[in-house]
Structure formats: structure tokens, C-alpha cells
Image (cartoon, rainbow, N blue to C red):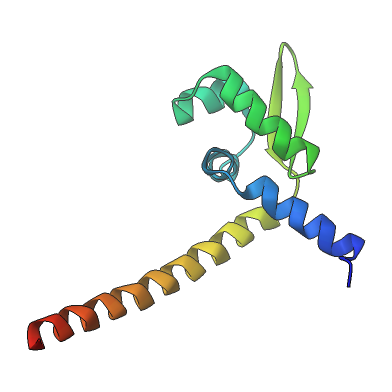
Length: 113
């Protein structure tokens, strides 16, 4: 069965999030809008890298851009992105707890052997 247009949209959305630099940009933008230069400084990245990743996020409608004077300010299009990243962090924490439990069990087994 072929994917629906909504499923395709969701896949593109999550693909746009699937890069460490883009996640870092979003985590920075949660605190408020920023220019490319401010993002560069906050993330210690070169301008072309920041611009390239912002273009991906902008093309998927995840961030917006607005010209202010001589600079362009970037912001989250939807504040729910913060909630999404918070939920993802909880999922990862749960996974790490499970992984930690399995590691402890594995170590106990190794000591018994």
C-alpha cells in the first residue's frame, strides 16, 4: 500500500530533524529568535554550515525567517517544536534507562560465569 500524502509529509518533517546540527539550532531557537551570526557564535559553527542547515529547516516550514535591518532573524514556526524535543528527550531517557538496566544484568551474568 503506497504512503499517503500525510505520511510523506511526516517523513519529510522528521528527515529535516534528523541531523545533529539542526537539532542544536532548534534547541537554540527555543530560547528566542536569532540571526545566522548569533547562531554561529552560540553553536561555534561556520556561516555556510548554519545557513545550509537553516535552509533545510526553512524549506520544511520548521523555522521562519524575517529580515530586520541588515540581518535575517530565524525563529521556530511553531512553539510545539519545544514540546516535541522534550518528548523525544524523555523517550531517549527511557531508552537509556532500559539500556542501563540491561547492562547491569549483563555484568551480573558475567560475574556469575
